Image (tube, rainbow, N blue to C red; front, side, top):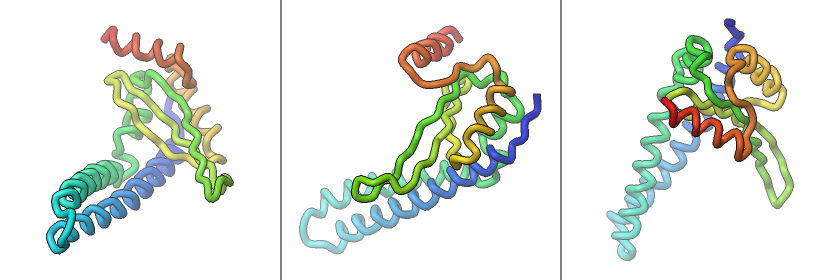
Length: 162
């Protein structure tokens, strides 16, 4: 069954943009630490090591964001659109953004695990969550849904069989 991928594409763009912004922030922090290691007078080794780790992490994040540049070609969009039978497990992770202990924003990350034990993430707005889950259920009726110990164990058992 073909599903409308517009919600998936919008979620991929949201995931990409979040990863891109975070990657740039971590890159600047790592660059600042590396600059401190080169031009500073104390803690040069520690700043160099930590700065290098931040820099490497930022490059990985930016590479991941680049893989989602065209949402139609992103691995998760291709999985859902072309190989929905390979979807093994779907669950939702709720993300609460808090300021001073009060929730100011709530969003959701839909996690989609495939037959190769790769976990894909789609950041979706609250208003799009139910529509995306309904589309995924229709496209991959044999997939496991939800997150609890039993479902996780069932998924791991499926992966171990292959």
